[in-house]
Length: 54
Image (cartoon, rainbow, N blue to C red; front, side, top):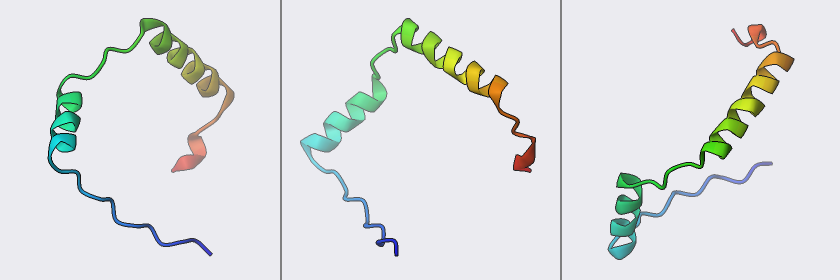
């Protein structure tokens, strides 16, 4: 049997400020990683048929 999902703790103080700064100014993605992700997406898109999801 599955365990109940616990409530997510709130962040406060310096940790919250640091989190908000990271959200406002995300690190740019490496173009090679973006291209690799696209290649993987296209590979699985070509392999699978997703018509049965409706």
